[in-house]
Amino acid sequence: MMIRLQSGPVEVGGVTLRNHLILAAGVLGTCGSSLARMLREGAGAVVSKSIGPEPRSGHSGPCLVVLEDGVLNAMGLPNPSREFMGELEPLKDEPVIVSIFGGNPDEFGEVASWFADSAAAFELNVSCPHASGYGAQIGTNPELVKACTSAVARFHKPVWVKLTPNVTDITVIGAAAEDGGADAIVAVNTVKAMRISTEVRRPVLGNRFGGLSGRAIFPIAVRCVYELYESCNIPVIGCGGISSAENVIEMMMAGASAVEIGSALRGNPGLFREISTDLYREDGISSDEIVGCAHE
Image (cartoon, rainbow, N blue to C red; front, side):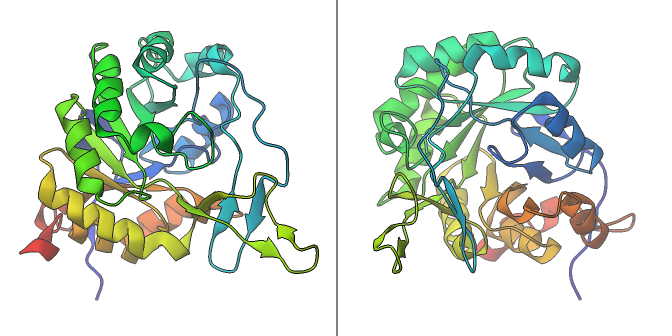
């Protein structure tokens, strides 16, 4: 019989969440109305799409391909940059975490300054595997991760750092984020991957390489959360392939204090309520009883 949790708000990484289930960045977070919809659909908090220092149109298509056990994408961080500020005005008092990216600490700080009054927290995208000069090119360098985290932490808003699994030792990067003043670590972003069409003899994505998300990467995400829980002293938020209440419990046992859900929402925007129905009971146990219990 599956473990059931107590329902109600929970504080993780300096943010009060309505429940443990968070909308992941880049999925249904492209505008204020879609973020508001996910909150109405039962998300405990929402993360916006990643916003950067300049508007970007992203990579040429195809940008997204649905696979048997996941989704392969190379969007290229398309975003309206500073113009996104207006999208968040109606959501000022809601649990909205703004995902931001930049090519250096100054750019991270600049983007954070735009949302310092409207965001409940920042999530630093140092992990996108398919945008040249951004994302994982920052997130594989511990010193850069620390510096970018420090540049955003000075705004005195909670800072979450989303890590890439495409490194030899993720705990080194987690420690750098913690040293830089992060309030939580999100593990993980997509796994660098590709597929080739045997019919046209070319990669299926316009960018050739992309990021794999969905059920296929769940075991990778569990392993990363497990390692970070042992090596860091700040909360870990699990992300990658979560699609059921059972997945949430497993991720928490690995060490996650909350989880982010993304690809599983494709075609099922009501998933937050579905998982909540299975996950929560009034007489359920506190999540504190199971977070990290697989380490004992």
